[in-house]
Length: 249
Image 1 (tube, one colour):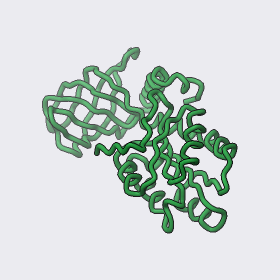
Image 2 (tube, one colour; image 1 turned 30 degrees about the horizontal axis):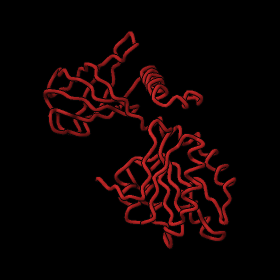
Image 3 (cartoon, rainbow, N blue to C red; image 1 turned 135 degrees about the vertical axis):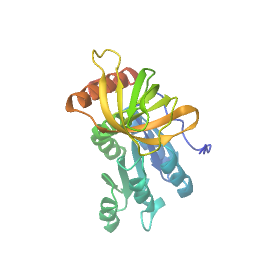
Image 4 (cartoon, one colour; image 1 turned 180 degrees about the vertical axis):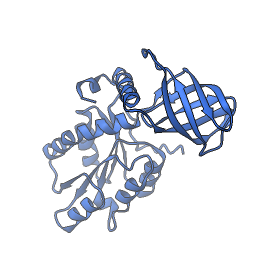
């Protein structure tokens, strides 16, 4: 999707993450943008439910702020976030008037609930408390561009050689001459920069595209390999976002 309404704020590059702020209150938009900026998180804002829904299901966000005044009576936006394939584990902050809606927001999946009337100090304190969770979300979904040779082996095709496109803790995108069917179990072997030995992982084909591009998900990594991959990706992410170096992996 290519939704780009004029009221959306552009995300700042090299931020720890991006938060979607959903409210019709311009003062709240400004306050959350300021408080998030203080912890190196960029913001995108929208005041319409339909635009919120499109963004929830078309982009990855590390955090959400949902004004229940926009989301009542059933808190559908909170439910949409938690059912989203890419945003289900994002940090959610709900704004709610004092009363039963506070508990409803918590049950709907909000990690933090800010009760009205709000002060900037309360907003800032809550967002700082959420920072560690945002960092973990950022690390979990980080995909590092990577161009290295890879060997893919399956019982169907034997050994296939290709090249990686990007890699994350959960899997990678790659380009091969022969595409295997979605669901095919494979063994992949590759060597990351700075590593002395090849990494070997059992994986599954989950997506095929044009030009021999495929997506795979790791299904079995040894403890050593998993630790090495996590450490390698953490270093690459900290090179991209220096402020993350202050946080433990």
